[in-house]
Length: 212
Ligand SMILES: Nc1ncnc2c1ncn2[C@@H]1O[C@H](COP(=O)(O)OP(=O)(O)OP(=O)(O)O)[C@@H](O)[C@H]1O
Ligand SMILES: [Mg+2]
Image (cartoon, rainbow, N blue to C red; front, side, top):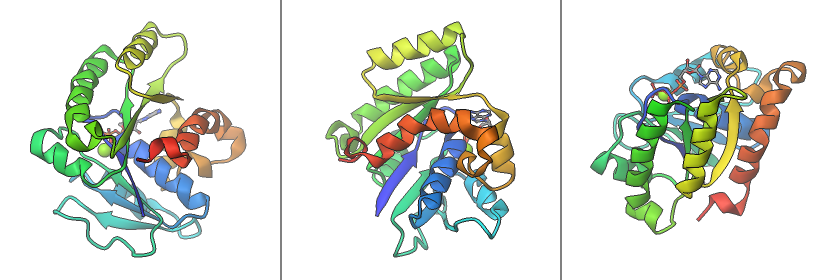
């Protein structure tokens, strides 16, 4: 079973949005998917409760009460939604559960600074330093032609963090979340720009580059 974790100590950068969409992507591709929520806010579990029965099923795993309980034995992929403010021993413990780590980051000065500090800490965690876990950053809620996006682009390039995709700011994410769906499950005429944004991220997740 593969473990894909969405992680950033900065709050509100899109961890739950990415986790639910990654889970829905692999489920629509026919994989057996489980979604673990390590966050007491329960956003991913709340999303799963909204999920319509006629969509590919995703198993719910409550992770925040310590340990991963009830991960189905036949799961191909476990997607983990991590809580904000993870540092130190807690961060090391979280990273223990993942071989692939996706770090969403918003194009704002506050978020870039906070994420820079976080990525330095993450890179020093043994498992990441030893390349037993692969990390990549994803710019989230990007609006075209904003100067701050150039700053983010420059920072990620300099930090030598693989920088995989830029996802636009779009109501589709809110719409999909509310309905227990991912953007891949919205109609093409609405969601094709988001499908295009996701193509490099899903290609990375499917490739050997995202696995130790
Ligand atoms: N690309 C996007 N376009 C529009 N809205 C977005 C996008 N990504 C996230 N959002 C919205 O931003 C808010 C924060 O996103 P989300 O809850 O996924 O972040 P989080 O990192 O999980 O937050 P927390 O740290 O509180 O767990 C939500 O209201 C979500 O719907
Ligand atoms: Mg969240």
